[in-house]
Image (cartoon, rainbow, N blue to C red; front, side, top):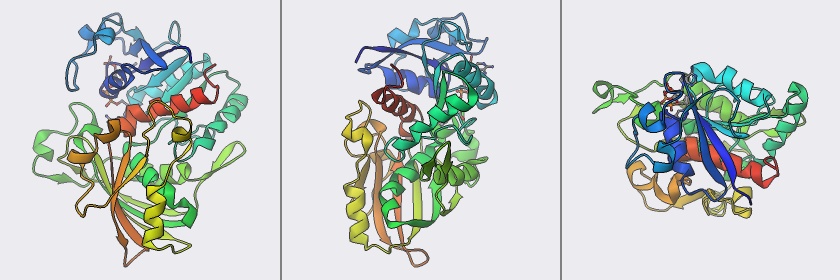
Length: 348
Ligand SMILES: NC(=O)c1ccc[n+]([C@@H]2O[C@H](COP(=O)([O-])OP(=O)(O)OC[C@H]3O[C@@H](n4cnc5c(N)ncnc54)[C@H](OP(=O)(O)O)[C@@H]3O)[C@@H](O)[C@H]2O)c1
């Protein structure tokens, strides 16, 4: 494949920096353009923002002169990591101008003609962009990835879809990096748990139903399962944990469910997409795993780790899942979406 130039809208921000880091050395995509607010436009990245991730700002990105978030001169493929307060209009402007906007922001996720993708879970939903282009009369497109906790939950649930998911009760323990920088005040989170993350529970419930739903022409028929989420912020740096209880219509044995999780693979693995982990769901047999500090970074941050599968006295079974919130839940998720799009010829 020829190298494809890419840009990042919101490239100076926290998620933007994760995109910059994740794209280093990518075999298909080359980062050549960064967009941000007029506070940063016209400055080299190294002068526009401080590097908030481990290590140094990558040298090739440091010298890029940040542009205003306007479609002129931006590459055709742009990742979006913009502040949600401005993402709606800017992403629309880029799609109208013919750009392929692969967004990590929440703004367009639940629109009927916008694919909300986890490539291993619902690769077929990408076809919705054809309806989007027809209905909106534009040559560009908007494709989104879900909220960081939803990614972990839906990847863990995907192997169970064959058993008929009826009800899901999920509780999260979410890392502080999910709140960006400077994020949650240290006086609020140290030695503490904050049992509220604004609009997170609603997003987890509706996004899970959309992702696990089925494509029906120009819309997604949501999974007819009840999903209830409790979202909590905990004093962890990276890695969201989700504990879930699930009711399944075909009443499989625990051994059948574990086997389904352990053998789960999907289109990104079959196509050998560069950012796809060999096993998207890794079942851990140790009694006290997964754990965010020990597991979230493994597999380049792109796999979801599941464990403690056991019977649930209220629903049918319960388990714990853990995933890297800023990689699999943000930058890595969007890059994998773009790789899926490239593998289907959308970037030609
Ligand atoms: N943090 C996470 O872990 C996480 C996870 C999943 C999703 N998200 C979502 O990702 C998005 C970015 O989050 P973040 O934590 O990276 O935020 P952030 O650090 O505050 O970065 C926001 C970015 O948006 C740019 N921006 C702000 N106002 C703008 C304007 N008027 N025009 C153009 N660009 C503008 C900023 O540019 P300047 O530097 O020039 O101000 C910056 O590049 C949000 O929608 C958030 O909900 C975040």
